[in-house]
Length: 150
Length: 150
DNA sequence: ATGTATTTAATGTATATACATATAAATATA
DNA sequence: TATATTTATATGTATATACATTAAATACAT
Image (cartoon, rainbow over all chains, first blue to last red; front, side):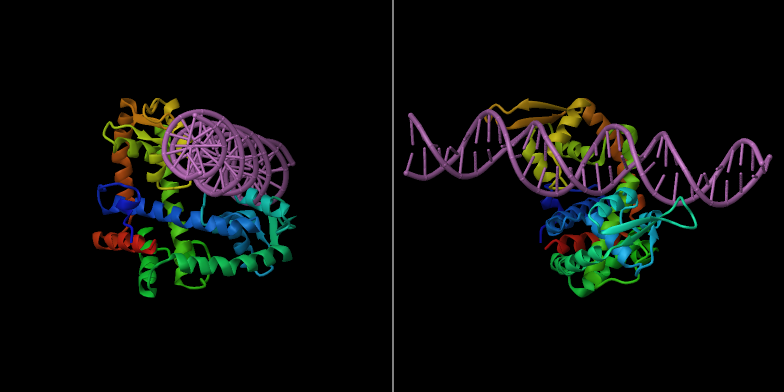
């Protein structure tokens, strides 16, 4: 086990709270770095994958761009542009919402569902492999993260 | 406390391991979003702040770009370009390494030390405020994150 | 000593984040 | 009804990540 102090060669932290923030940032990078390679061959970025997952969760019911935005992992990301990228690859369809012409209905395509299914198994396996914790520990981690956010 | 399932409106996860990955990504965004506002008035990004912290840790001894890279929280970031941005603001100095002309010695300036000191107190306070955990819990979290990475 | 491989930093390009602003449609209100 | 406000989406710009490539200096093998 490599403690965060070793990993970034910092001798000590102000307090355990500030250490936890750094630890979180570092661990985040550890994950994202490893998963990018997995996504690359499918022509999808992690963020685009996340949007496809949200859309599949709709089970055929179209969703608006703002609803996607609300459910994204990163609230500051730009759902509008991500949807545009996915449309260029024919992974989603966009259509004007009939009852409110400001809104845009977004729907995952068959092609989108296929690439998602293909990727998902690999991502889920990779996630399990990268979290070196027991079942009890990982449940504890989930509780602590939920509580951390207040 | 808002559980991750509520926060991103996802009913269930494949298993606690996959949930932990999503939870980590979401919690990361929670932090970064809040800290960006803090950095903005100082003309520093969180990444640039991190580079300045690494340089200050050197206590006046110059460091190479690759050494900064090794110690960054995100190993995929680009120390060369971050140093360039910091130099434009006169927060760091760059000079050719005398014994190896490939390398570049980087040193934090007085101005860099000043802005860092000014920001640090605020960042540390903000970090404490955002981690809604007891001392025991935050220590537990640090241990779990260290162990998670294997 | 010469040629090859490696190392260090910089740079090019695509994607995404962060945040401000624009545009159009819908809704509220005077 | 006319005007103002709000909402939904798109777009502009700066910064950073991800990854490939380049260029120069150094190390190393023959």
